[in-house]
Image 1 (spheres, rainbow, N blue to C red):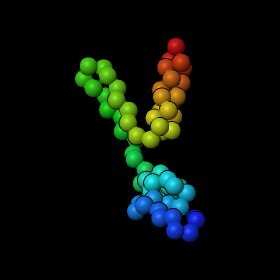
Image 2 (tube, rainbow, N blue to C red):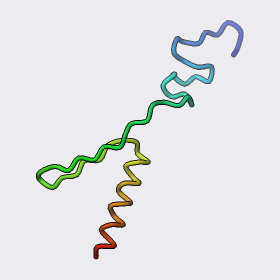
Image 3 (cartoon, rainbow, N blue to C red):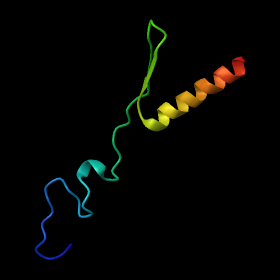
Length: 64
């Protein structure tokens, strides 16, 4: 960091706000809700949602 240059509160020397830092954060649990109308709502981390969709696709493919 150059002399005399100030870093805003909540920012890191690399210039990224604190929420975008590499520090680990709490993991959101994967939530799967089966609605009465046949809708399926999956929420959580993108990697977990994609893994669940892959699992469901494999089940459907195995069923025929």
